[in-house]
Length: 276
Image: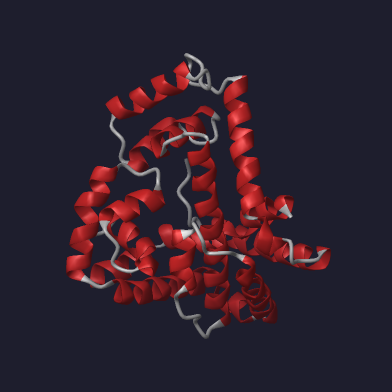
């Protein structure tokens, strides 16, 4: 159901998300000749789709400034292959999870969770979900903790593809989606603008367009109609992500939620994610 789609995504996201901040990731990517930082991020996340063009990465990642992607992705494919980089990403996830969670990964509930989440993945239709489809084509690892990581990654990218679909229905660009996110106050605008590479000029232009739609006030905060837009997008995102989670009963949901909360607490408590 839609409510479980959001609830379990929030509980499990950190287990996937550490790959974007763990030093092991840059170590793996730079060993293949990639530059540290965004080149490794763009290419490693896109690698599941193969050596796609920069414009495919622009389309599927949605809210990053396109110039950086067009500069970095072709160079990455000159230096390594998507297949090699995918394996490096798995090694990075393995090393980071092992460092942070240690022997906890050997407990039977990790394998049980991996098996349970893997069993619901077939409910995810790949049509219109390019990032999900790319990850679906990858071979499952043998280690339970990496099976769990891949299952969470698949369900996360399935949700993300649906989120982009919901935004496009609303006529919202990737940059405008960032500006609206900043308007909620959840993340400072400066952080979102800097990490996605947008110039002040382009950011202000998007802000003005949203003000013309009466979605953002002059002070940069959401208006009531802007909040209604956000609610529509989030509701549709949850509905588009609901199919696999609808297969779980209440006991399974409770099990995954408790495990996700525990593991996320350990991962976050280890200082994995930067403070805003």
